[in-house]
Image (cartoon, rainbow, N blue to C red; front, side, top):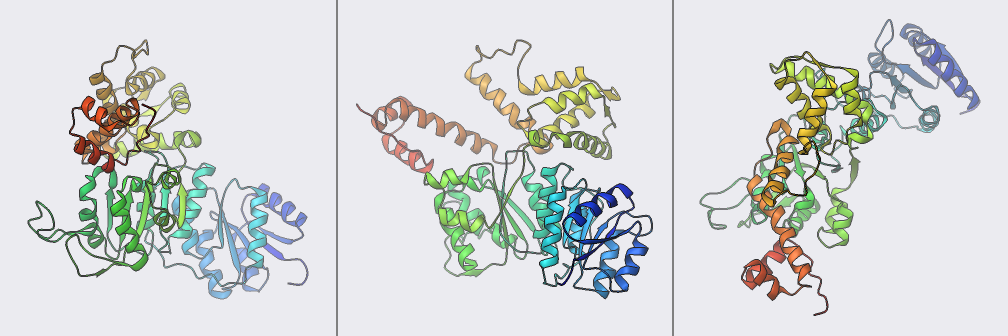
Length: 479
C-alpha cells in the first residue's frame, strides 16, 4: 500500500472521534471523521478509505446493520466495531455480520492501534458466519475487561467446531459458556448434552458415555444409549473432566482421534459427529504430571483453552449481576428488590468462594425471605455470616465430625444452581470422604497397607482395590 492509509471513523461522540484521530495520526495514518452513518456510507460508496472504525449506536443507523451494506459493495474493506453495549450478544452479532474485530468501550488505544495494523495487513476476505437468531437476553453477565475478553473469544469460536477446554473455579459459569458456544454456534439446531464426571460412579462412566449392550455387565438388562449417541450432530459437554477414570480417558482419546467408538460390550464401530466441550476446576497440568490424566488426551481437549475468572477478579460486575438476578427472580414470581449502597459495599468486599453461583443464590434468598423492598447492609451481613456457617464468635474448635460434614454439605446446597446439587450426591460425597480417609491412614502408617487395613477395618485386598480405584499414591517410609 503506497502512502499513508486512510481510516474512516464514525462515532457520534466528538471526544472519542478526537482521541482516535490523534492516536491514529501519530501512528502515521490519515483519518476522516463522521458523526453519523450516512456520511460514512457515502465515503464507502465512493470508494474512499482503507479501513472503517464505527460505533454501534449512532443517531441514524445501527453500525452492525451498516456492516452488511459495506460488505455488499466492498467485501474486502475491513470494519472494526466499537460499542459501549459490552455484552456477549454484541460480540456475537459483530462477528456474524463480518466485523474484523469488536472492541468494547472504553478501549485501550495501544490495543486499537495493533488491531488497525493487523487489519490493514490482512488481505483475506473474511466471510461472515451464518446469521444466528438471537434473543435479547444475556447468557453471560458482566462488562469488566475480563469478561470482554471472554466475549470476544466466544464470538470467534461460534462458527467453528474446535474442541474447547473451559477452566475455572466452581460457580464461575462453565456450563453457561458451553451452552453459549452451542446456542449461538453452527450446531445450535442439534442437541446439547451435558454430563458431570464427578457425579457418576467410576465403573459406570464408560457405559454412560458410549452406551452398553444387553448383558454387558450386571444389571444391564437392555441396551443403553450413551451420551455420544444422544449428542449426535450437536454438542457434548464433559463437565469435571478431571474426575474421569483413566480407562474412560483411553476410550475418549480414541473417539477424538478416529471419530468413532464402540458401546460397552459391543463390537460394531459407530461413527460420531459431535463437538466436544470439556470443563474442569482442577489443575489438569498437575494431574498429567502425577499420572492421573493422560497427557495425549489433555492436548486433544485443550485445543482452545478458556479460563473463566473468579468473581473476586471481576467485582465491578457484581452490581449488574445483582440487578439481573433480582429481575430474573421477579420474572419467576419473587418480589422485586433493590439494594442500598452500604449493602452493596459488603457484596463488593466479600470473598465469594462460590463465585457467581453463590451470589445468585444469595440474591434469590434476599428476594424470597425478606419483606423489605430495599435490602440493607444488616440483612446482607446476616445472610453472609449464616451462609459461611460461622456464629457470632466465629469459633469452630468444638465442632464435631458430624457437624463439620453438615456444614460442608450446607455449603454444597447453598452454592448449587437453583439451591439443589447435581444428581449423584450420595456417591460423590462418599467418594470425597473415602479418598482422604484412606490416604491419611496410609500416610500415618508410612505406606504399610497391612496396618492401614487393620485401622480402617478393611480386608487387605479391598484396600488395594480402593487404592487403585481412587488413584491414591502410596508413599512408603522407614519402618
